[in-house]
Length: 133
Image 1 (cartoon, helix red, strand yellow):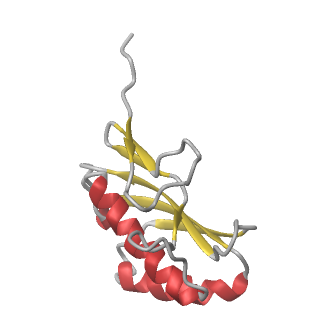
Image 2 (cartoon, rainbow, N blue to C red):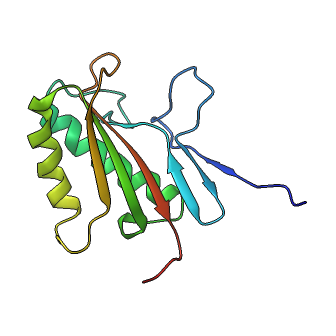
């Protein structure tokens, strides 16, 4: 029986504080994220507005994928957690920036969810590297 290997994915400035949780893990060609938030990696600041957080959350998604050896094209599923429905427009606006082709987007499920502190939006993703169509 072979031992399953996994690799934690971490991004400086985008950790989960004192919690022993990586930003994600890669197992074989599969990539799974923890909660990707709209926090500025260099300053630690979280914008007050949904638009600012949405821009950062997608920028952080791209950085996470690069760290994992993947790209936006490898994302198969996104779960978006939003504080309330007022955040949905900011989420959709950035979704269209990062996934402009309606025939080439990952699946997405959006949930209204209680988020900690000032967070208005958070993403979790599943990606597969090296699988072509």
